[in-house]
Length: 156
Ligand SMILES: Nc1ncnc2c1ncn2[C@@H]1O[C@H](COP(=O)(O)OP(=O)(O)OP(=O)(O)O)[C@@H](O)[C@H]1O
Ligand SMILES: [Mg+2]
Image (tube, rainbow, N blue to C red; front, side, top):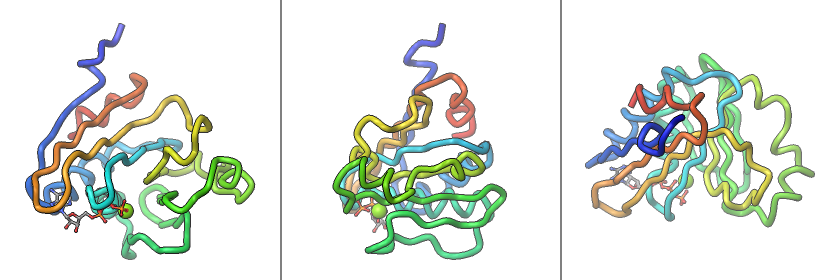
């Protein structure tokens, strides 16, 4: 049986480029249907991570945090769905608005502020927990909630 140690890995990055590079390495092992939660305070680096992940998937356009769009879709080796749910009231709104649907099975879904979704998240997922803000180094914990996501830990 897998232990917690098998399913977690911690990396420290000292600048945004290192966070982007880490995310790009992880994107190399992404598979259709993967769900990745980006967890961390305001300014922790969730969007920096998303930009690096997109680069690793070969996304050409710029990934940013649009203020009034909850989900943006990008073309890469796999489709990339980037959700930023900071302004979402609750999970019902996400479901009603078609934010979570079967199309995401074909691509990779990155979710910032996934706690807004309450219990409707898939059980199997990768959690990227970013600790630190400002100019401080970031401690980035990769946590696979199922063995199928362990490949990300190996790619880090
Ligand atoms: N090691 C690091 N990794 C990532 N970002 C860093 C690092 N060091 C400094 N930064 C800076 O921290 C900021 C992170 O901003 P970012 O928009 O990615 O945060 P966020 O977690 O998406 O915030 P929000 O919750 O507001 O969406 C950027 O300005 C980035 O340059
Ligand atoms: Mg962000």
